[in-house]
Figure 1 (tube, helix red, strand yellow):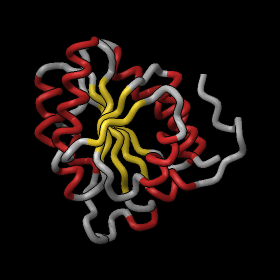
Figure 2 (cartoon, one colour; figure 1 turned 90 degrees about the horizontal axis):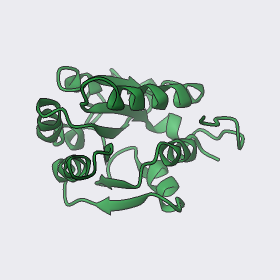
Figure 3 (cartoon, helix red, strand yellow; figure 1 turned 90 degrees about the vertical axis):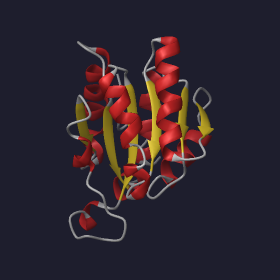
Length: 174
């Protein structure tokens, strides 16, 4: 099992039913895991901003957390307007952001964009820096999404972490 599969299982346990997204850099392992999910349906958005707006609309209509996903670089910057709207209106939107491998971050690789660009527009931003952190980072994300005044959260997912092989059951999410 890959770490991306553990993330999908955790999202299932959090009750995520739909994810709106656009295939982008670093997300291939997550898309594979989602394709194997029996409970999460994925809407392929025409662009990244629309993915966030679909998640925002879902959250407004249902009262549940809306989830969107995007790749790094220009894909991430395309979501800023939607995330800003969710923040202004206190809408719980989780943005799953693909990212370059950890060793490449900060080295100005092609299309690198730091997730810190979201810091003034979200309640919280987390990064998977190692696979062992996946359960605690996801738990903290959903706690922030659901507690106090709602608002968006961004989870930065480096490709090498998503692709890491882990033993089945080693990243159980309770």
